[in-house]
Image 1: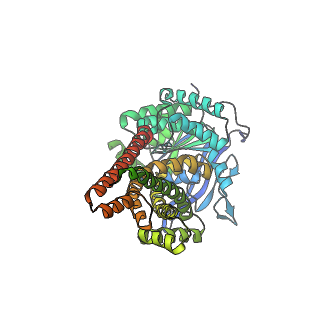
Image 2 (image 1 turned 135 degrees about the vertical axis):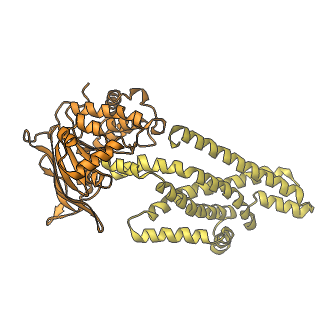
Image 3 (image 1 turned 45 degrees about the horizontal axis):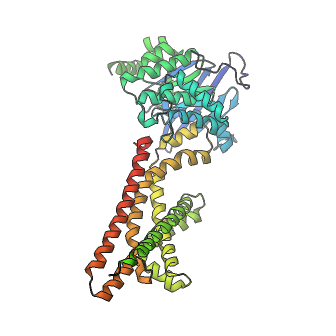
Length: 270
Length: 207
C-alpha cells in the first residue's frame, strides 16, 4: 500500500511543523516578458498543494524555477531551510553543476510529456536513474525498480520500452522513476494533460496513494476533481502571480475572486 | 575479359569502402564533438573542415593527396581521401541526429540530477545513433560508387579492371556491365544490412 520508503532520510530534520519548501518573492522574466511577478508559496511536509490557473499563467515556469530547470530572475527557494537558488550580492547567479545536481536529486519532477528515456525499458529507466544519480548498486537498484513498478501497477510491463506503453502507463513509470530517488518533494507539471481521458484515472489514483502515504506534492493540474479530493490546499496562479489560495474545497467551491470564478466556470464547461 | 581478375578487384573495392567508412564514422565523431564544443576556435575549425571537404570534388582531393602529397600508395591515398570526406558528411549526419533527440530527454536527465556526461553517453548518444543510422547507411552506399574514382590513380579496383579490359579487347559492353552488376550487388547487400539493422532498432524503441 505504501508507496514511500518510510525510513526517514538522514537529513529529514526539519523543525516539526515548519514548511518544507518555501518559495519567496520569486520572479522570472524571459527578456521583456515577465512570467512570474513575485510568487510566495510554502508547502509543509506531507502537504499536497494543487496549482491551478489558465495556461500561460506561469504554473509550469514556477515548477521549473523551483528545481531550477529555469534560472529564476530573482527570489529564493528554500528546502528544509537550505536555500537552493545561488545568489551573489543579492543577485541570482547560475549555480555550479554540483549544486544543481544536489538540488534536483531532492526534488522529483513528473512531466506532462512523461519524458521516459526512449532507449530504455521501463525497468532500465528506473535502474539507470538510481545508478546515475545516486550511485546505487546494480542489484539494489533493480530490486527497488521492480518494487516500485509493482506499486504503480506496472510490474507486468517492466521489460517494455516507452513506445510500447500508453500515456497513462508511461506516466506511472515516470512517477516510479521519480520516487526511486527518494525525493523530499515531487513537482507534477500537468501530469495527466497529455493522457487520454479514460486513462487519466490510473495516474490520478497512483498520485492519490502517494499523497495518502505522506509525500509532499506540488501539482499543476486542470483536474479539479483531483484538486478537490486529494490536495490540502489549492493555489490559483494567474498572470504570473498568486491571486487566491486556500483549503481546496472552499477555494474551488466558493472562490472569492471574480477571475477565479471565471476560470473555474470555464473549466467546468470544458 | 579476364574474369579471374574480378575477385581481387571486388575485394579492393570492398576494402576501400569498409576502411573509409570506418575512418569516416570515427573521425566524424571527433568533428561533431568539435562542432559542439564550448571552445569557439574548435567550432570554427569543425565548420571549416566540413565546408571545405564537402565543397571540393573527391577526385580533386584524390589527385591532391596522391600526386600532391606524394607519400601514399594509391590504395592508401584512396582510403584516406574517402575516409576524410566521409568524416565531414558523417559529422553533419550525427549533428542532425543529436538535434533529433527530444528536448524532454535532456529535461528528464536534468530533473533527475544525472551528471551531464553520463546522460549524454547513456541516453542522448544511443538515441542519436539510431536516428543517424539510416543516413549513414545511405552515405556508405553512395561511397561504394565513389570508390570507382580510385581507378584514376591506379588502384586496381572494379572500374580500373573493367577499363583495362575494355581497352585491351575493344569490347566496352561486357566489362562495364559486369562491374556495374557487381556494384549494384554490393549496394543492395549494404541496403539490406542497413534495413535489417533499422528494423531491429525500431522493433525496440525507435518506433
